[in-house]
Image 1 (cartoon, rainbow, N blue to C red):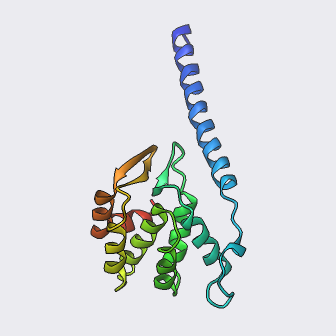
Image 2 (tube, rainbow, N blue to C red):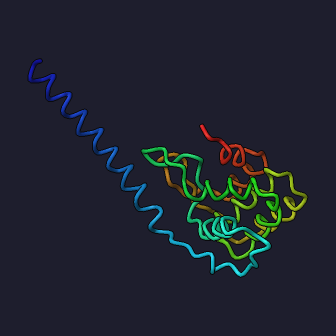
Image 3 (cartoon, rainbow, N blue to C red):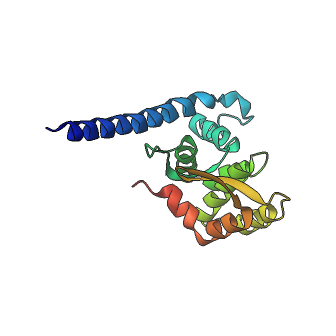
Length: 171
């Protein structure tokens, strides 16, 4: 093997190791940055399971509306796993409605996408309430790209069902 070829292979190996290291850093930091306690939610044990309460807490503090896979490692975000858990609950409508109050804007948008996904009659009221908010931008994460997007565009995507399909996608 020539020296040039060896250098080429070593540089590719180093680049790949850097990408893997970034993915591992993201994977290790994300859970540690959001330690949640189900004690924070004042529901009785009969009204929601412990997992549902934990999912509500995760989504209520969501810093960004994220696609089903993010980062270099295509990691499924904690928020997406929480959304899927609520989506599958027999109490999904009530859980998503609860999430609309006191959540970050991304948390409210997860709730809105959930109401759209289950075909809730409460979707239109929630949509109108969020559309009237004074905030005009929301942080989103598409793959590796974290950006501020116009709220109007994200609301249109939620109404069309794009976000609920994306959040349900298990590729």
